[in-house]
Length: 449
Image (cartoon, rainbow, N blue to C red):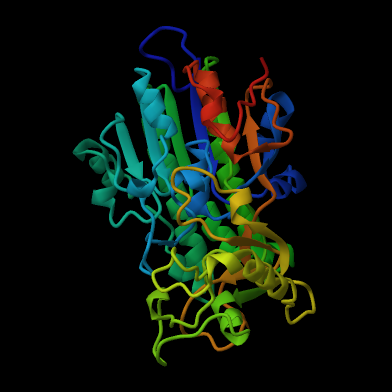
């Protein structure tokens, strides 16, 4: 038995899931000296590349990973979504996730779940035994599911997220220190509740990895000023994963996974500026800062990340593209997007996906008509103001990548080859012995029968 010994008796299987947001598989593979514990898990258990979803953005990825279904079912497509029949937009929260979460299935089966720091879970659920909502929670008090949890967070100087504004400074010293402090406090709270030993599913996410990647990945890729600090951060993360692994008993399976990969960022691509330059989008007046400011000559617009919508009659409130011309107009937009090349002459769009090929479900009314998966180095932005050029540079030097997320597990019977985010929920349900219908999911269990 390990540090987190079972207190309740019985021999039911249990699962600890540790999310490491945005950590690429190749990073771990290329640095076994930094990731000694993950490397050991791969050698004795199972590991491999995990394909992300379209679009590979955390706000869409975590709802899909924790439900096993695509955004057409979850109803969450990205960091910003559009109201049905309106040009008003909103930032999706946990209440906007329409599909059933993994931990709710656990609870319905009479089991207990502890859920900490998962993005897009605010407000915390009252259905499970304890939860701390993650990314986009407005405050620490609001993120905690009850007063006892809130006190634990306060006592351990817990932070919901890294202070990303510090990453904008040329001197990244304070940013790196803040990232470590956030990681340390997260680990402290995780181990506190792991030791409580009253859970069947422990589901916790380290989000600070995504923040470090956004601001330091370019340094890592190019032997830059902060490469050593980047790798030191990951050495600390791996050590924490190892300590958690070593404390688990033989009836508990550990799964470590990321929601998307990462790569170096060279150029921010202002998609709505591109559409305006090409005659697809125009505004009602000179002052414009949101989708509501487009005029009645607009044929297409974009929302982050890389989602493109036709201004369609009958769907958009002031749509101008007739339904009879939908396919022709969409093909014209595809052609224009395929012609977009960056300052270095490379094609920006590596792959253009039609919405109906990846989005299907009861909540696909706001699905985009196209999603662009960009070539490495081009980060697709979709603001409506403040950009006069299509290609600009910002403070970030790392960007999300569709390929190259990862899954590691202490269970050697998981077949990770060819897996994707939709497979995680049915796999955990199988490991826990919770009955479910495989047809409910877009993925399938990775557990070999």
